[in-house]
Image (tube, rainbow, N blue to C red):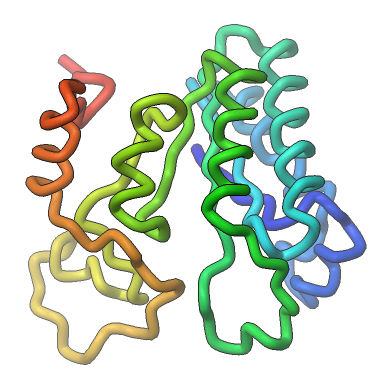
Length: 200
């Protein structure tokens, strides 16, 4: 289970979630621990870098993982580091830019501080960045992704879409197919693994 906290600053969080269950920050913050207490094998952590001070959010995410790793040593922990991409109403959120160099520093710090945690780098990042970061920090990257609302309906239901899919939630920078990414990883002398568990 991967759960995005958005930001670790409760005051900023309240300005982003104005109503509904998602507005209760402590409940959202404790989601990973509730999942582990409920028997989940592993949990993921993610702050959307750029909504607030990304250095504080990156540090808070790492400490959150570290705390739960010590409390639940049997559990698998993973991190994802999405950064805010161009979106509708971007000016209302007042994003704080996180550049590739800074993202690389965060990923390297995570790898040093949490050597056994999984690290996912999404298709929000460009292909060249993802191709290089898997050599020393990332353990997972996505492939063949679509972010439009309802884009996967045909795949899961077998029915053709009756209408156009909704707006994309964010821009994809690496739109390579699964095969292209598989070949890129293999070309670096690494072994692509498409699934972690096989149930028999």
